[in-house]
Length: 262
Image 1: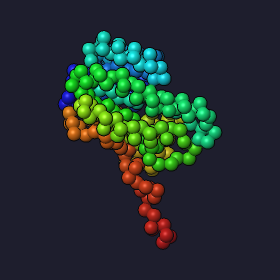
Image 2: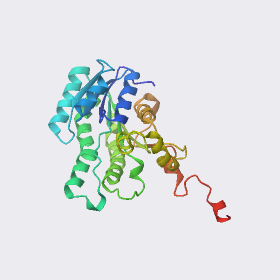
Image 3: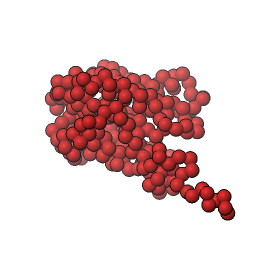
């Protein structure tokens, strides 16, 4: 994709399965990448095969000092910042049983952490003549899901936040968009199924028009598109990377009317 080679990106949550796919995709396009994540072991494992143009900086998004240190390391190593991908999140969700601390911790990382990172990188994007930000929403932001309150609500907040950020940063030539993945092969699904992707497809596939879950690399391609010059007139937009999940509706893809005639 055009407009990525030689640029610099920070990817929060870049040690996760989807985050790692974003990092590898950027690297493949010649972008220098900083992984900002709390998981040092996983983060360094992502860096190892990619070489000197990818840097891991252990970063807790609940700590402004660590955010500032990450930005400073990025500048010292790569000389600037062009892109920010806010992917990091926590999955704390016990619906009505969740505590006040659960709610605050969830918002602190899933929403506020990304804002604080954007606040820290903004002047450096301005120095480069602008930039692009991609926040991570979710299909969970737009529908009700049994037993899930905190994660969907923070993702819904992220979609509104994206519009607000896009409006106020347009004058800085910083575009802000979001992606909302459908069911995508990720750490949570891997752990819940003990690595059984076929089972995940059997359960999640019927919720998507394409009949399967997504791959991390498919989400990564959408992120790169939104950062590239191909998306130069796109800002304040949510891109659904969901295999048709949000288009389907409650009847799914199975013919319903014939069942009335059985």
